[in-house]
Length: 430
Image 1 (cartoon, rainbow, N blue to C red):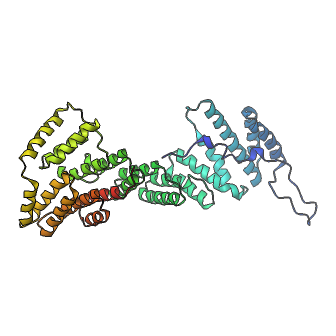
Image 2 (cartoon, rainbow, N blue to C red):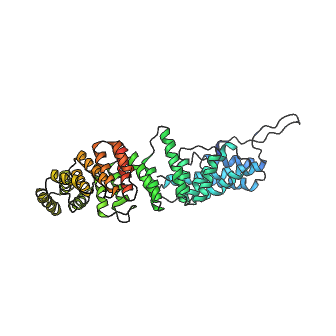
């Protein structure tokens, strides 16, 4: 997410005094004649200001500097002081812009703009139409100086004064978050994204990344999970899915602590979202399911990895897994026999494990039948079975049934895993 830009906006924030017609004030000839509206400058200020104006417009800074100093020294009235501040601001900004153009990579010291901007904001002679943009520019100055609470005050004042800029809402979000109010900032960001979407504009992906990063850094777990789901819903690429899944439950110090068995369902989601990235992902997934008695699934995962080029054909671990899984598959009892035993069992444990076998074989209809039988018989971890039932139904295209199964899950970490599967089920195709 971009920060407030610096002097690239110099021309936008100029006071306009460089092109203002500076002339002697008009005075009423008698009490009945109205005075011509506009600035009324003292003669000394007017004379010096005219010279300064010409020099600033020509970027003749050697001439402009003493002329502006003369205006500042001679200023007595509110109008005089307004012109002095406006000219000082224009001069300093022009000097910075020329310096930046000459050496774009050089550091910029914008602090010289603070004093004239403060004077312009405070001056009673400043036109009402300009007050919003001066507050906005002062907020940008504070933001670039990492004075975030002050920046937030100026940005909010600019908004209150009716200043409009396509980035203002997001700059308020940044200032608020950087001031420590991450929850408030993300709430404002959500409102900004909603407004953009309602206006037919797709919010930039960086907004979601920014919200995720800030929420995660602030250790706001529910908010981070929410923004991760919003992010992959809006931008469902395989990379984004992998980053989300890894952050939620795979990596060390993940948002949701999970044991190896629980991580399997996240690897299954990686497979569904085509986000298994390399041989480490494939082999960790295959090894985990193989050691839990699901050789068909392990074998399929290894073969997919080799076919995709993610696992080198000569990889020793892949070869071992293919050998082990082939042996296990030949030695397994026929699945139909196990299914019959599950139907006669006193509880649903065998039915649940049989459902897992069918799930690993991509036989989703049979898997769903066995999971429902397990729930009916009882004696099983209902959240585990409902998660696997939801996965089987989601993979088969039964979104309503999957949503009901996922919705029945109560506890962490199965609930967070189910939420990710629900997000995938509802997200558009990448």
